[in-house]
Amino acid sequence: MDETISSAKLQRLLNINSAALSTLAAEGVVVRAEKRGTYVLEPSVRGYIARLQVAARGRGGEDAATARARLGAAQATLAEVKARQLSGELVEVAEVEAKWSATCRAIRSRVLAVADRMRDLPARQQVKLARELREALTELSNGKA
Image (tube, rainbow, N blue to C red; front, side, top):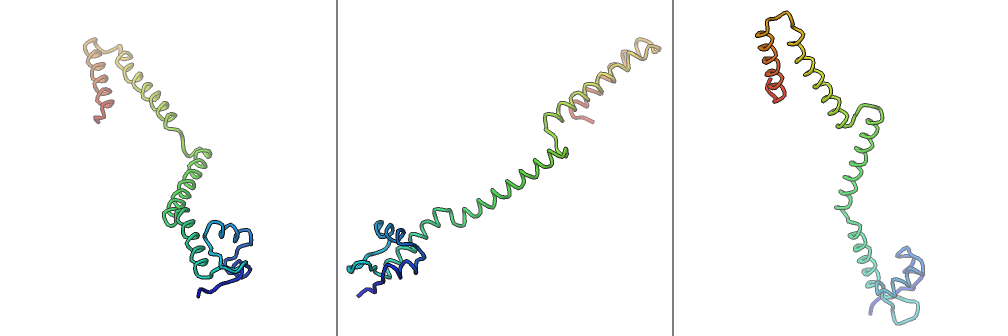
């Protein structure tokens, strides 16, 4: 014969209140005995443990812990990046690109203007100088040093 337990003792054993025990009984998690207010001990405890295991798997178990750790690390990295951005240590890529483009255009204009400023050179040398400067700028723009 299966051992029975009173509802009060089962509540204490499972650390739940009477409403929770009634819900578990209605769902078939714990097994009622024939005598009113009693439950069959072993199947009731096994059912409750099984329910807790299913709930733990639903939270993801070990995989969820790994995911939470990755999420926490990502949030910490994001907070660090925002702090560095606010302190001026980091700038937007678009800002840097715009600044470098403007700087490169200014350098190009200044270098190309050198040949025009060399008015005391003969015309042929001026043309040759302009060609050499333009060729040097073209090579630099193509990544050749």
